[in-house]
Image 1 (cartoon, helix red, strand yellow):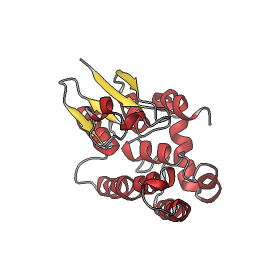
Image 2: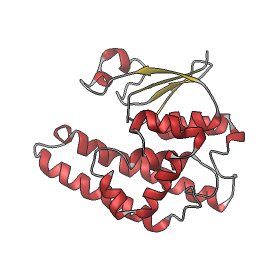
Image 3: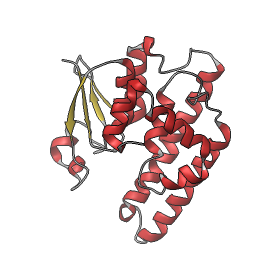
Length: 208
């Protein structure tokens, strides 16, 4: 059995799909429609009890969840793809810093924006604060990263997949990021036009 990815269009599974594409690794895609909250159903929760996308089955049947964990597993399994900077390098330390920030801080802000009623009796207030936090994080990354043309140098990596996918989500970025965060927009453009991953990117977000 090869890799199996559970996901949906424009979801966190896109991050993992970009990494697999960069590594030249085929996978089976099993759609779990976010519309209708299919991911919260009993069938999918048997795979990922958190009811979140994505989930990944490894060739040996091991289940991996959380998009960053899935992407890092792919990077470790296929080191020749160069999805992470060299171990102990400053570039790797920087990449890990921002990768964890996006996974731990921006991802939850997106969830609060998408599903504010899950978090408070005042959904509008939750959404507004989530939007503000999202834009604050993108502005912080925009000031810190110096693409060449990717986030940590000349090679596409996990951080680039996160930036390109998460900056397109519906929690306010997209047009806002492109207008206010030129560095993030440049990295996203580099990903969208990078031949090994362009098809996977466009499958989720359309032509750029």
